[in-house]
Image 1 (cartoon, helix red, strand yellow):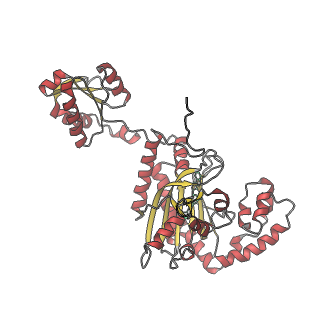
Image 2: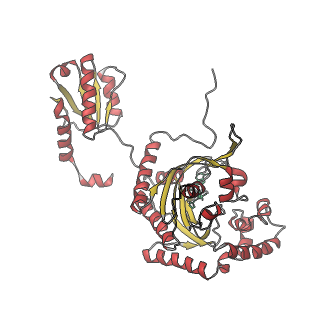
Image 3: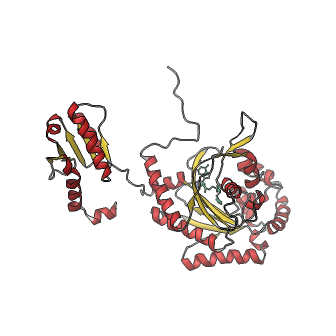
Length: 434
Ligand code: HAM
């Protein structure tokens, strides 16, 4: 027997009913983003490799070791499966002149690929909802995005996610800080781990983000970027904080929050939960005013964030907040040649009234069909045999309410009878609980 092929490590299938939860969650998110004026955009999953090298930075973990890159077999062009969406979104905005003389609020959802060590909450194929605003100087748009995320946690029924913010200032402020930071870190050469040694002269800021407890005390004494910010950067950061306070969003300033992508300046933020263990960042982003120009576009300020859908789903699962999988309203069981045509017609008629209908396929006895009807979760079964078909009748059975029982009715009355029943038994209290 040949070996059964498996999905690629770290790239899991999302099966029903989980995939149904995903659709519900994505619909809630899209609805919230649209209410703030964000419009959908869809970018390709494959982009030219230099896009990510230029946007994310040559000396980041993502570009150095996590990209799925390959050459186009026809023309040798270097291509990469997107590890994130900001670079592709900025590329699309520039290529199509979307931000010329106007602003853009955009969002996207989809797969991203990073060759990381898979573990709970960290995958090689994962999904992000990403949001990008182009053409706004802020700080109001930075704060509005954070406010929108807070509303989204509410809409999804999530709490216990905490906001951390920081400012990375501007390039020249980071350069001054970097010189002093390297001089400080050089004094600790003998305790630096391999990662820190590798980053000392390429990306020293990332050393401050180390998870190595042996280095954390040293990091506490390191020069703080916030102390190097100029007047404009400080005013921008103060502006974001002021709006957050005004609208009542609690936050912590984390001076060691540096992000793993090089395009950021000024505001950066992360929403973190303790409920997911090591992979607790569910949403992260910030301002990247230089990226559009760096990729060849006109200078365009920008700000955005992305959230990890797998982590959101895990969080909803942990809090018992996953939506119930939807059941059909009606299951149609039928037997006999003359019952087939009315069964199909009734199914279509009921669907046209807005009901979800599962039509039994594959034959079998009424007994086995009714077992399937019960397992489907549908409250109603419509049963049609040759006898009912001959008179244009059906048996309408409530599968969960004995008082309704089973009634022989005219086929054209099914929708009305079900609607009347739903109106009579509607209970706003149980509706609210659901
Ligand atoms: P990021 O911090 O690399 O930022 O990713 C954003 C979120 O994606 C993370 O907070 C996490 O929830 C999720 N995520 C990242 N890697 C994985 C993984 N391997 N498995 C599961 N989930 C993961 C960005 O990607 C930026 N493009 C965000 C942004 C948009 N900044 C401005 N605009």
